[in-house]
Figure 1 (cartoon, helix red, strand yellow):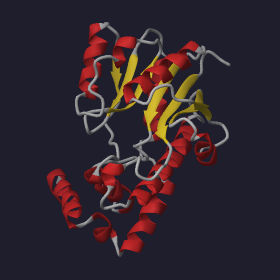
Figure 2 (cartoon, rainbow, N blue to C red; figure 1 turned 180 degrees about the vertical axis):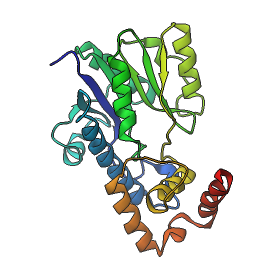
Figure 3 (tube, rainbow, N blue to C red; figure 1 turned 180 degrees about the horizontal axis):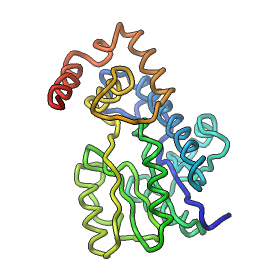
Amino acid sequence: MSKEVCALAIMAKASIAGTVKTRLVPPLTYEEAAELNTCCLADIATNVMAAAVSAPIRSFVAYAPLGSETFFAGVLPDSFELLPPREPTIGRSLRHAANDLLAAGYRSVCLVNADSPTLPTALVTEAVHHLRQPGDRVVLGPAADGGYYLIGLKNFHERLFEAIDWSTDRVYRQTLGRAQEIDVEVVTLPEWYDVDDNQTLATLVDELLGGSVAYKGGYSAQKVTAFLRKLAEKKGGVERLLGRELRLLIGSARVGEG
């Protein structure tokens, strides 16, 4: 293993109906939400492979729950390795993944969420580029909901994962505060969005099916796109897929940007 390699792990849950993307129900069913989760994971894995063409990356998935290995083996490319879970919480899972991969001798580590299927490939390669530069630093990719879609480290810093209000809009801001406490440089990537509620589902549909002006240059996410098209056709169109209220959210966003 070259010490120049960045270990990149997707933080993911197996697509068990009723346990993933439940905030998208309705307008989706639990089964549809689970299928979307699978499509997101497959597209993000393909995106990571695309980034690995121009950056020294070794690919992992830090998965949950224990016992779901067969699911991930059926979804991920063979080049991905599995990092089994130790604890179920988000913060502890991030901590263990970062610590374990750095302890294995990798030059750096990037942890990427499984909720941003259209994350531009260039942002992944940019994160790895920053981590290859001399000196210690942390790379953060802020999410529109106040969390982060990516965290990259060259050295393990326990404090970055302590006293964080996980799954809230304070995660990114608090992580910046922890970095300031321990005096480590932070490189901030451009903002992107997670698909974890009805409004961001509308954003995803608008980006992939409606030519959104809000997010440009995103990854094509072919499996997610095909799933959304199939779903819209089954439900009688995008409006029925999302519901009138969510469709109006898209329209309001476009007016605001104009």
